[in-house]
Length: 157
Image (tube, rainbow, N blue to C red; front, side, top):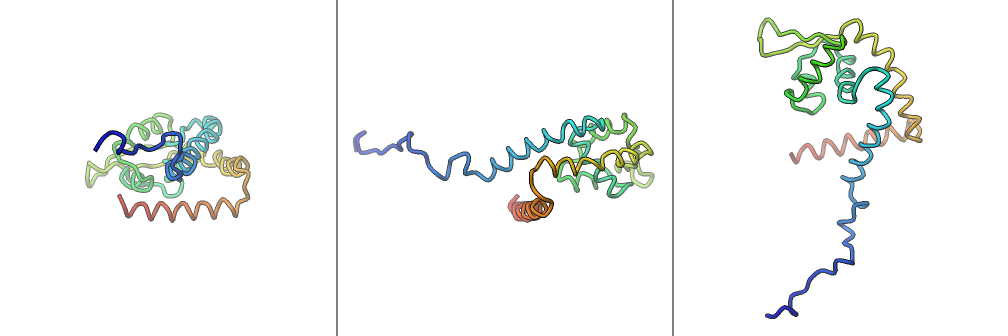
């Protein structure tokens, strides 16, 4: 076998399956980046980062959860939440207390300031809907499809 017998792929000829714009993962990733950029000024007005906003939404939904509960809800590691929760506590939005039954468990509770912040945050979803350029029905369908995709992918990790 000589060098002429070995075929090499033509680099100038793109493989459709590997084109960046054909990748669902890139569509999700780039859309997520832009979504958080749209959120940024809205959340800065509330004194929150995007990850802090997510944690606050979990607590607005159900106060008095543990760090583990919030971590599970956000699909993240509890250790990565601790600095974020400490900052929320420092801002006066939540309190963190160790459980009397098990000191390893940290309970999270909204403060009055944290509850008041929920009222201020009520305008955020409407701003995001407006920025999307889509109607509510289309966004809800997209969210449903993404949740189904997330569930399917979860089975493979």
